[in-house]
Image 1 (cartoon, one colour):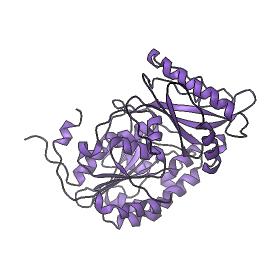
Image 2 (tube, helix red, strand yellow):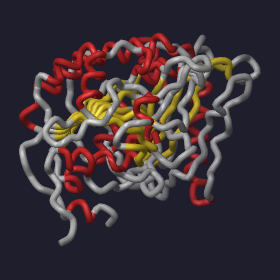
Image 3 (cartoon, helix red, strand yellow):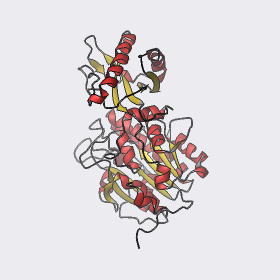
Image 4 (cartoon, helix red, strand yellow):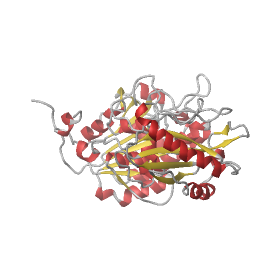
Amino acid sequence: MPFDYITELLEKNNKKIVLLVMDGLGGLPMEAGGKTELEAAHSPNMDRLAAEGTLGQTIPVRPGVTPGSGPAHLSLFGYDPIEYKIGRGALEACGVGENIKAGDIAVRCNFCTLDRDGKITDRRAGRIPTEEALPIIEKLKTIQVPGVEVTVRHVKEYRFAIVMRGEGLSPEIDDTDPQDTGVEPLPITAIDPKADKTAALFRQWSDQARKILSDEPKANFFTMRGFATDPGLPPFPEVFGLRAACVAVYPMYKGVSDLVGMDVIKFEGEYPTDEFAAVKRVWEDYDFFFIHIKKTDSMGEDGNFDGKAKVIESVDQALPELLALKPDVVMITGDHSTPSRMRSHSWHPVPFLLWSPALGLADNQDHFGERACQLGGLGTFHATQTIPLGLAHAGKLLKYGA
């Protein structure tokens, strides 16, 4: 087992570790010589932590490889995404409370808008709000396919998940999202012959759904991404000896946390202050807190440079509430980069801040930004080393060897 070396070094104590992830944090200047979103944001609290702490940058998968959100988070949690592969479908389904078992097939779906020729005009159906999506989901729940059980669960806004249960199913099916407009959705196609039966069953379901949705003005079809089953990941609490809690708004990030064995904390609200209040409520019950902020990524994908900077500022303004809990180690980073200039995930290294007043060594950087992180004392490292770094700075790792 690849975690044996670290499991044997674990030392229990009462130190608290916070991993604050601003999704898609890394960015680029909109013009040559300009600032990135993180550099442009007014973030005095993060800058103070940067001056007192140590900066660096992470590689989520491999240099030059653009990661999806699932693999990027697995990497942050210590699981090499090249070795541990998991589809987005399982993450989304777990995030809305579905218990995915080995052999169940889950897929994440996006409502989309088709024109009269069956070509996609909007890949997200105008980002229809949840209240518009729910009645449509109820229609889809009426579809039955002989020989299997199918569950349809709404996720958020235009997103939903399908879980198919039955004998002899395989997740080896290609995505149907062409990642473009002006073209038709891709057919449901097996990547491996062992998935031919599963692909045929999903085609039956999809054909019925297309008829049901045909008169919808916006969400008249959908694309499918990330066919997956339970990957059987080694449990995070056992591997790293941490009582771990997840505080997140979006279901997918609850899903990946649930799959690795973290407790997902329920709370109301969707702002950083709401999330930090949830952390405060369970502070005594855990020693590791994964806190996820989604809207940095959403703004980046929309190409909204100023909006992304403002989200970073909102996190910074709320940060004193989190620091008042007196964590021993705080790590602030992203799962991947989502530059507004590119309107998509990218391969660029991700800014990383480590603050550990008891055991950290400050470098020469005094603000939190991409170029400062390039020069920081931690250097560039693989994101799978995030948790070991946190453990070490919390005094939770013994010496390796004699």
